[in-house]
Length: 295
Image 1 (cartoon, rainbow, N blue to C red):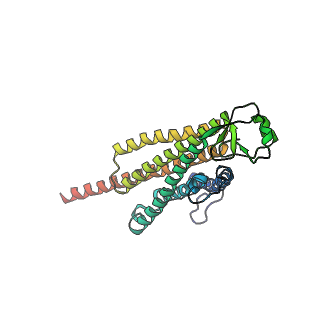
Image 2: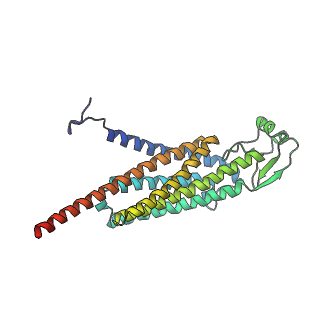
Image 3: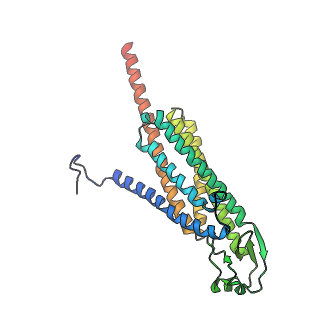
């Protein structure tokens, strides 16, 4: 077994394996940004035929706009709860971190409204009359294969649409069956619920971290936060399961990784709270001994 020449301890330890696994998850989440950007760009070409500008950017690229600030927040939580010592989380550094977090939250809230906009758009449907969808092959229409997946109408697709009641997404050249449109709408609604649940997660974590830094996190508040997290994380897990059942692998995979990542953050906070309680108990013990010596 290889050992560290300085500490003379094994290279492979449970702590190092855990750290490697944690940062592998963080890396995979970072890499997912590319997949979200590619998916957003493909869908935006059909949902916004007039082009994307700053007015509709957060709706057209809602997943990308959402993921990047979330990654920054994830790394900030990791720094605050595991890397940087409490004594250094004050003064100028504290204000810098608060500024960065505030900017991230603005983008995340903007992305949330983008998800809401997408849901309203994909559920804004009108009947589409077509006796023979295959006669529309050269019309520039796209069809609803999945939420955020609208390929051009081809011979195979038009045969699948024939004989079904069709609808068109208002303001676009996207058509599809009522069943496909309903499924896309449910996936869009799941995005809204998932985004709102994650906003609640970070709100709880922010309050918990601040109270921890101010030494005002009592056992009663800890229990309140724990119950709240069970509800919110349960909602997020339910969204992940729904994506899996709906065959939306990227959403499921990303949600699964995010849940694992925040399990790590929760473990950091739990360890942090235990260390603070131990330091306080040790400090009280020293004070008590000093008082006894003084008597």
